[in-house]
Structure formats: C-alpha cells, structure tokens
Image (cartoon, rainbow, N blue to C red; front, side, top):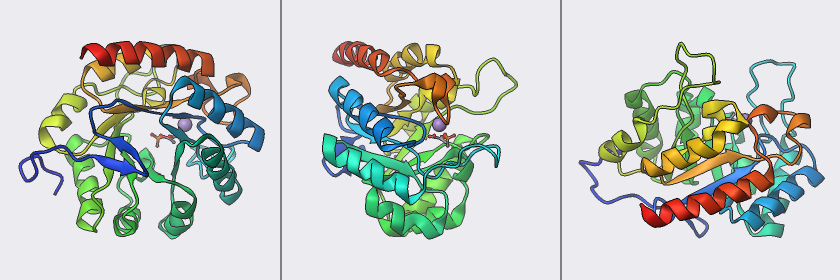
Length: 263
Ligand code: PEP
Ligand code: MN
C-alpha cells in the first residue's frame, strides 16, 4: 500500500488544513517537551511569528533513563492544545502506548510515533484504526525496508495519512547523536508516495548543525522539517543541546524560503 508502483501520485496529508506533501515546504517547530504553560506559549508565539506551520511538543517522553524528565502527560497535552488554539498552529505530539491513542488524538491534530516505537505493532495498528494523521519516525537502527513495512501496518489498518520522518540512525560515528541518512530522502521519493520530512535536531544532537542540515535536506527533496526550538536551551528539561533559539529559527525560515524558491 505504501508503494509508488501501486499509487504514482504523491499522497498529501491534510492536518486540519496544513497540507504535507504538497508543493509548499512545511515547518514544524517547538520544544522537545512541554514544560510549563509559560514555556509552551512563549515558544508557540515565537515560532508562529517566524512562519512555522505547526507546533510540536512532547507530553509523554520516551527517555533513555527512567530518572530523566518523563513529560507532563495529560496536563502537557492540555497546554499544547491551548497553545495551538491561541496561535492557530496545528499541533503534533508523540504517543507511546496503544492505550493512549484515543486520549492523545482528542488533544492533538497529528500524532507522532517515535523512533523507539517504530516497530511497536500494537501502536501501529491502533493508530491505523484511528485515521489520525501521523508522523512515523525511523527506528534508531531500522532499514528503509523495515521502516516502510511499519508504515504499511498503519495503511493496512485503514489510515493513509502517514508522513515519514528521517531522524538519523545509529552508526559507528559518535561525534554526532545520530547519522543523518540523506540517501533516504530521494530513495523514499522513488519507493513510496508518502510525504517525507526530516528532524535535523535528533539527527545531529547539536544545535549548531541544525540550520545547515535543514538547508541540505530541503535541497535533497524533503517535504518539510520538524525542528526543536527552545527559548532557554541551557535550562531545557529535555534535549537542550540540540534545540535552537527562536531567533535562529526565524533566520533559518528566511533562508529556507529563499532556497525553496529556487528548487
Ligand atoms: C522527539 O521528537 O522528541 C523524539 C523523542 O524523537 P525520536 O523518537 O526521533 O528520538
Ligand atoms: Mn527530543
């Protein structure tokens, strides 16, 4: 069902009016985690002003350590929905448990399946049945074939609103958090009709690299970006070192627009 052979025209995923996979480059921005009303509102207003199309923010955080901040849960979902309403931005957030799909879908315009859950088949089936637009991130060590088969689960269960997100994979290189698979972008465009976006924040783990990597993946044909933006990265409860400041995001948006105009 995900194959380009079966469907030659591009799938456009409509997130309550924001169309992903259409001509226009889509930018999704926001903090790794929702931390407080003030934090999410300040960041939402800043990224809206910079021209973002959607707001991201995690309420259920799949952290490597059980001692790290785990997210605000449903309270976080409420704050995210409120920030979305007040700015007019559509919101996307991760769901980690199949039992939470309905709850998360009641607050969010779009769901996210994180890298660690790419092959959580019960979660894929549940989101398939929900028909809610979803970002499917590439697993930490997943091949493109495994990733596409995970997407196949969602389509097979009834949901065609799937956006693939390359977020870097684990390699022998440790200088960056992950290694971005740039090849995946043009290759996926051949193999599937689904939209492809890139997360340069998790791909690099280093905020300094985020602007140039963002430009590179758009030049390579990605349909959009999902970027971590924080107004106080050194105090962020999650992923501060890879989060860019709102003013840097605004500058990047200007450069992305110029690039989009020539490709
Ligand atoms: C995130 O988007 O904050 C996240 C946890 O990403 P990933 O699943 O790609 O690691
Ligand atoms: Mn993160």
